[in-house]
Image 1 (cartoon, protein in one colour):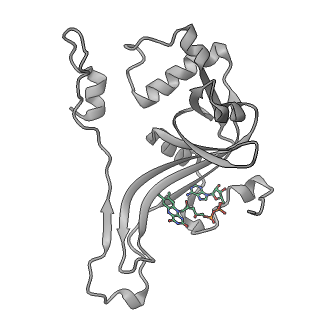
Image 2 (cartoon, protein in one colour):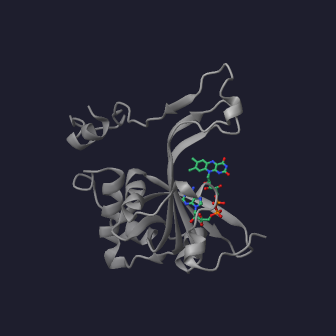
Image 3 (cartoon, rainbow, N blue to C red):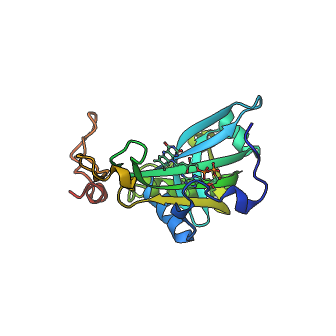
Length: 219
Ligand SMILES: Cc1cc2nc3c(=O)[nH]c(=O)nc-3n(C[C@H](O)[C@H](O)[C@H](O)COP(=O)(O)OP(=O)(O)OC[C@H]3O[C@@H](n4cnc5c(N)ncnc54)[C@H](O)[C@@H]3O)c2cc1C
């Protein structure tokens, strides 16, 4: 059994490598805004934990994610189950002389709390925020959800009240005794980029790739 951390400060204090903790709210926003996937934890009625990958978007002082109204895990969250949402951005590999000191460059965020269900009348706007975060520019072009689709969709909002950010960067931090090893050491940055858009096989008519898609892909 893991010991419970009772205060907010205790729950969000990074213990391992605490110098990597960043407490600026702007850093939290930057991590949430740069990622398109979050992982949301939920524990079921018999205490089994699940971690669900979801699309997310920050909406001011909350993070939104959506799922099926039929999902038992989403229903559990909507009923008030405490959760932990994490976002991880991998920025590189730190290739040290020892495997022990080899690590990663990353930016990660954890948000703790209880999510609430976005009311029906606010759902369309919340879905617009999600769509525009995932596919900037697309909301204006795509068909918006109809009443049946809205009824099948649950949008949850988790407040950005209790959170932490950890950023790992810098060169390898090898043990001095390893510095004379005859091997290369350094950092290999990692970049994620979009590929060339591939047209839907059932595309009807002559529709060029939209300008906003070109902007994502730099094309
Ligand atoms: C890409 C990646 C790979 C990693 N690989 C490993 C690994 O292989 N082994 C390993 O031990 N650790 C790894 N970490 C670090 C790991 O995420 C935790 O930070 C660490 O294991 C737990 O630290 P702790 O004991 O201080 O946290 P805990 O005591 O478990 O947590 C206390 C509080 O610190 C905050 N916190 C802890 N970790 C993070 C985080 N990553 N981001 C934001 N807030 C955080 C949370 O608010 C949490 O409630 C990795 C992190 C990333 C992003």
